Amino acid sequence: MVGWVFLRIYLDYKRVQRRRELTPAERDLAYSEAHRRSAERIYRLAIRMEGLLIKTCQFISSRADVAPPEYVSVLSRLQDRVPPRRYRDVRKQVERELGSPPEVLFARFDHRPIASASLAQVHRARTHSGDDVAVKVQYPGIERVVATDIRNVGLLVRILAWLEPDFDFRIVTDEVRRTVPRELDFRLEADSAERVARDMAYRQDVRVPAIYRELSARRVLTLEFIEGTKISDIDDLLAQGIDPNRVALIMTEAFCEQVLMHGFFHADPHPGNLLVQPGPVVVFLDFGLTKELGGEFRVNYARLTMAVMSQDHEAMAEAFRAIGFRTKRDDPESLIALGTAFFESSGPDRKAYLDAEVMPEVNERLSRILQANPVTEMPPDILLIFRVIGLMSGLQKRLDSRVNMVDTITPYAREQVSLAEETGWAAG
Ligand SMILES: Nc1ncnc2c1ncn2[C@@H]1O[C@H](COP(=O)(O)OP(=O)(O)O)[C@@H](O)[C@H]1O
Ligand SMILES: [Mg+2]
Picture 1 (cartoon, protein in one colour):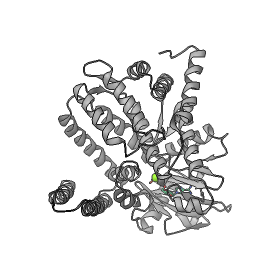
Picture 2: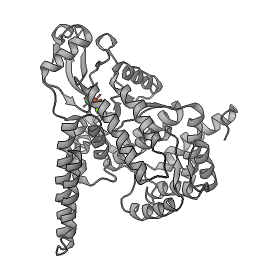
Picture 3: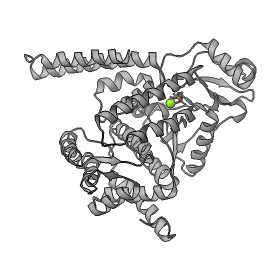
Picture 4: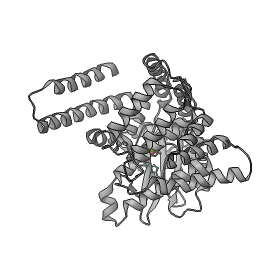
């Protein structure tokens, strides 16, 4: 079925491509329509396949910086508006997990969910002591879907490995096998939420919902209900007098702190998992996917960040190697090209998002250099960092952010490097 859908998408684009008689404006329109049709096809497929394919679509829909707007708009529905399960099944799941049905456990429990995403749907409820809560109930049977997904990722990776024999794709499969099953245990999610809440407690402009442990189990998670605007609803933010640029700055700082300072971060910041309150305050939801970095990796990553921000080629080559990147010919040219391409793609103002205007040219140069001397190894810990950078870039673009990457990120990296050097460990 997946193959069939992609074949139809391919043929659709081919047909547009063949219509030589079109004027440029007609061609743009034809492509836009093909984008929309394709996005709709992928959307319907994702709803049928569930699980990881929905997560993949959430990722694509969050990349306003690189994905065509038609994909962003159609696939955004999968961030928090997947068609929900029947209440009967939800009630059964709660009873199985917590020992009693919702009407006994809660003073009020809305039958209609407020949201539904890749693994669970969320119902609004009130506790017997009168607190407003959000109850996240895992879809019954999702474990099986996820197990199949993991096997399919394995298959996909074997195909990629065949197309790109130089790169060791096993790190991707390994990381998926390590992280995805953890998402199904909401007790781990509760631990992660509380950890980030502690790490960020001193920031008044970042918030994480409190957990109700006595109303939570492996497949049900009860959280403080939080009112807020979805971070990508720009019109709504502006109508409330919230400056999207402030929101973008908070996001950038929050991730610098989580990744570089604390070494523990929320690895799934797509717009469905982020709310904004007046202040502005950014609310982090959904700690299913998080990542912990070892101390040495964290400091080496800070060194790499500094090297990229200052475009110091020698330091870049050294930091990439220290962190575990290797190239086929073992000369640093490709690594320097990577660090430079990332920087140049952010445009002349060094904005914290990729600039579609300059990207084609930068990408072309990069792929030429990489073809001559491919990257053969990468540290698995970098994958989720790249994921966060990608999602952040999409979000910053969406918020039309003017945050300057160099000015904002460099101080965090510099501080971590000098702290490590003062205490005399994890030296390069
Ligand atoms: N504490 C909360 N308060 C208000 N809304 C919430 C809360 N937690 C989750 N939601 C809503 O439910 C949606 C799905 O919850 P989430 O934890 O992201 O589940 P999933 O892991 O399936 O993505 C969110 O996108 C958000 O719209
Ligand atoms: Mg979510």
